[in-house]
Image (cartoon, rainbow, N blue to C red; front, side, top):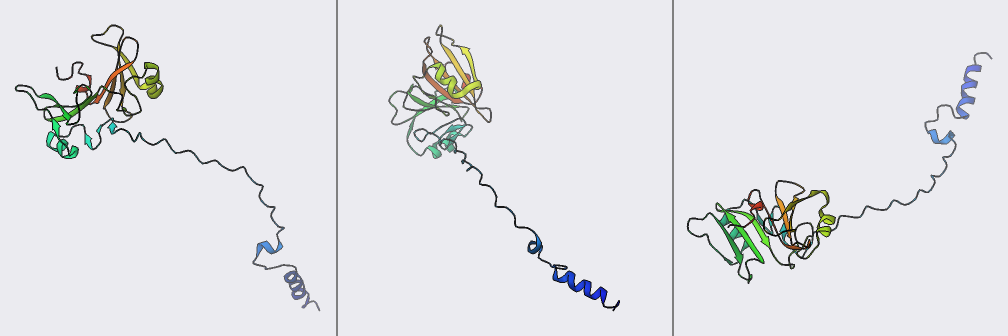
Length: 198
């Protein structure tokens, strides 16, 4: 009888779940997870302004540093302007531009180095425009705005904005009342030429 006791005990244990490979069979049921508040998706950043081709590093497909031939090919349209004799700096304007002060591309040493805008029809990279106040420009560009006094107009300023990446710069010119009258973007040192190619 004593020889049967260990076998009997094992049989009883097996019936009670001994050796069961399914742990959930003997475990108490898990409580249902409590409902958590829905997670709101993060809104994507606003898209770039589709009404402008202005960029910190160029304009449309044209990038600062391109030679004139590569620029002309990327532009793909007719351009007016050529360097004067004994000058390495000059402007080109698209055929449709009536006043070169409204929109022009600067070249120096045979390379695209800057573009100038004097009309509210074109937005700067980041959203600045002709007609905005200094406060509006500061609201758009924050701590990146550096102020310098205008060289010729008392009370007027240059609002210099460094690109978020790279060394390119955006410059807004204001009048004495603090309104943006024109802006330009380009590479140093040409972006800081006060008189354009002059």
